[in-house]
Image (cartoon, rainbow, N blue to C red; front, side, top):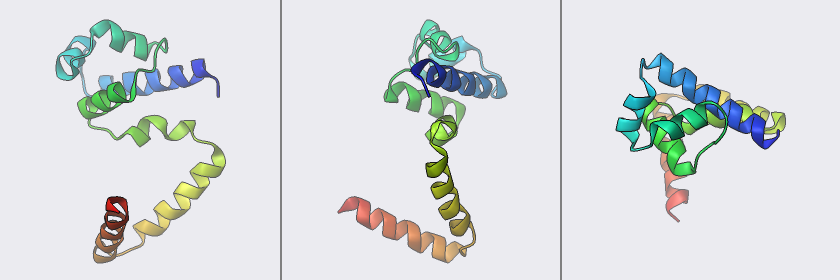
Length: 109
């Protein structure tokens, strides 16, 4: 996927979630500390912003970055992720907590 296509995809997703939350670009600017012009540039695909910007917008729209970025992954990666996601859903609540605790243990190493 080319840079322009990536920017356009990210912009469309953010615009969609801003509208779903019934927010104006000015309201998002107040929530995030970003300039309304910058938000407009992102939504129109002229910029994708930094990781910091991505996180600010995700927090404003109450979404996770994977919602914005998932469709940009290669099909092989999507299949790999979905297999484990489906398996994880099958676990009991107790087992899910155990898996997450194990992950956190390894991340802290």
